[in-house]
Image: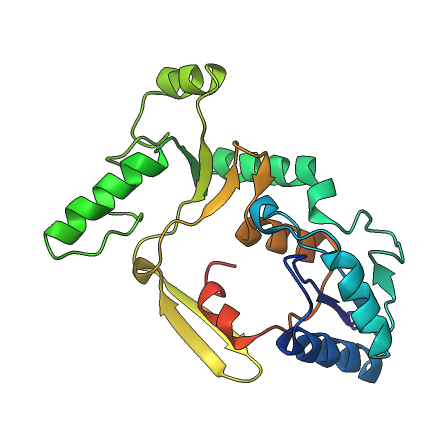
Length: 233
């Protein structure tokens, strides 16, 4: 049985909906209509520092003004509710912990000040610092610290993040409908932060993928600026 087309437009409520966003929404909407599929609206509001009051309503009003009808999502409801990421916190924590337990991610305790110092030191030597396979075993991570030390830090309330453990020297093969076949070596990628204990929220890189999986999204149609993130996702 052929899989039903399900696409999503997932803006962040960080300000007015701009023309690039409308363009992406329109492509998703027309693709869904062409294939008899569903158009889902998801609000990705995990960046609490950039949240703008009233932005979500502006997005909804703008889509309605453009004649883009929502089949499922915020303000419409559906079987995969809630559709605001800030209301799905426990879901993301479960998957972040699952990635750690399966060996695909790890806990990191580095502070912003420590990372800034390490970055400055690398730059002083004419190098570019990247948090990757070359350094993660030497920093304050669950890969380098004894298990009891990791437990002690977490129980003491020290801030931590979950970072994806990017494999070393593997080829990731992807197919983009516009760009065609794309291949990226994992050694050129860094270990992205997936979850932050400070605000109990995931980053885009985790929440986006978890939601696309759980909401059964069949095709991802988004701006070209997200192509560099595709190997991670």
